[in-house]
Structures are given as C-alpha cells and as structure tokens.
Figure (cartoon, helix red, strand yellow):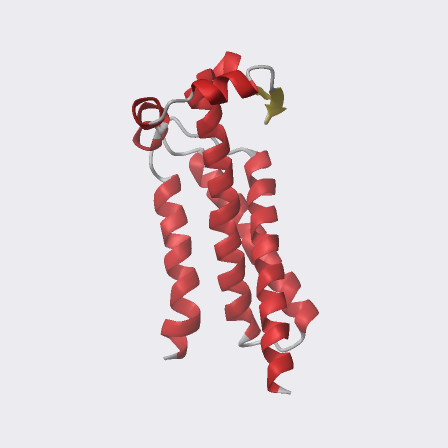
Length: 162
C-alpha cells in the first residue's frame, strides 16, 4: 500500500517526463495544430512588438512566427506545470521518511533539480532536441512551487488535526 500511494506516483510521473523528453521535436510540434485550430490574429496584433531572449535565442513573432511564439509559452508553461507536480509528489514521498520539514524541503528540492538536470542532459542524445540550462532553472522553479504548495497543504492538514 505504501509503495502504491507514495512511491508509484512520482516514479510514474518521472517516467512520463522521460518519455516526453525522449520524443523528437517533430513529434511534439504544436504549430500545425495551433494554426489550423485557432485564429491567432489577435495574438499577432497584441504581441508583435514583444521580443526577448531565452537561452540565447530571440523569442518573438518575427523570429518564430505567431504559432512558434505561442508554442514557446505553452512548452515553457508545461515545464513549470510538469515539475510542479513532480516537486509535490517527491515532497509527499520524502515526508513519509523524514519528519523534519527543512530536511524534507531540501532533499525534495535537490532530487527535483537533479532530475531536471539529468532530463536536460538526456535530451542531448535525442534527435532534434537540445538540453538547455535555462530549462533546468524553469523546471526547478516549477518543482520549488510544487514543494511549497505541498508544505502549505501539509501544515494546513496538521493544524486541523491538533
């Protein structure tokens, strides 16, 4: 029971992350679906002057096209969301073994950052993918937020029990 409740969710989630990062970019390209299913004219008008750099590359409608610009935010939002869940699940697992909150926090965060770094390293070996340190940072922020929410919920639950 303990395995299926605490160990299995983060293992399956990490496996899902590994599977997704094993796919070549062509298998995950959202641009065709965005262009055929959404009218992005408003987005183009609203954000045509927006330009910034991420991992040394310019992100703008001019350089990526409107579909590529929108896809960038979807993909980076997915990084945050996926690692948010991983951070939450890892904290939940570690909390069953370590009762000291600060140790649980640091071990959980370390494990999430380690997984994010190894996942980006893994992408160097996947066709048409690259590992980016900026994504490790983004993943780590997502994991950190998931851990913070887990701590908040854990404290809230324990207050009710007292």
